[in-house]
Image 1 (cartoon, helix red, strand yellow):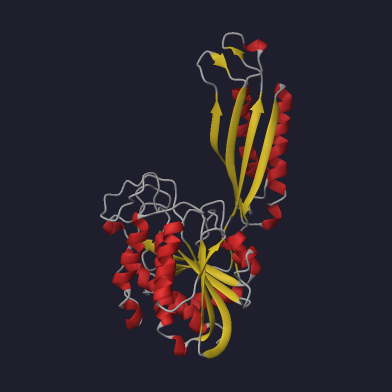
Image 2 (cartoon, helix red, strand yellow):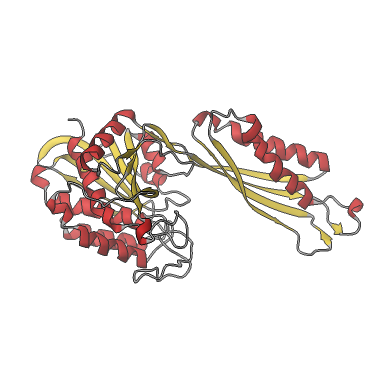
Length: 397
């Protein structure tokens, strides 16, 4: 990965915010909170917004915060969204701002997203006379699960007044710091989860003929599930079936009577939503029947595919070309089978979600997302503010 200095035409007012952006981000990083538990995070966001003249609402989808700013000039109603939650991961970084909460850390950049949206809020509060239209600032809980976007939408955050378009970004350690990844159509995948309990008949390890070995049945299921993507889905349709959990047995000389397994399913094509659970269960059912076992099965649709509107994507692409260092440029081939509940906002209104590169291997800041040593190059925080502000300014022009 080639890393060039982040040198961009960021306006002076936003560049001057950079030290404050870092301070906000590090404060959130030190006090991470899991989904729907972002009480202190929301309180800090509310405190800052009130200082700048906003009248924010809180308690939306438990811990979500929404602030509205109305400009002095007529124009559209636009929304920006940032997620606030952390992950149940023990941080291994030794930085001064490391997590002070055991077993919880910001390992996906949400602390940076919240700081960037606060930077946007600060800038808009001091530019109200030049603001065209209305902007809703949405600070969302629980993106990492079970999902805060859908309950926020159900609570009416896109209404009163009705939002015309929405934008958001994700700091992305798969791209060099300062690059922008954006594409129309599917950017991120559906995120489904499944679990299965297989019931057999246990017994002595030396007398398998008296048993129905749940562990063997589960092992056959795990292997066979891989054929769903390999042999039942078109190779032109990206999809993944991953079994991430398998538990069976308690002793080396006892045949397990029960096994549990669980995993995730990812795909871009919404037409696969009804197909995947049917095919997975058909395999589980057939193998269990062949061995004389029974099963209990659950399939959860967590997030749909995240699909960007073509016109909104063109706007983000235009904005990015204005500010991104030419040696870094735009990354159109930036799809990922990771999931994001920003997808629900993009189902409700046109919009665009894009990646802002944040990796800098020269500083050791290139560990992947959800890694206990994840961190990102904070130099891109002011760039994130500039990108979002320009999306607001250039919408509809």
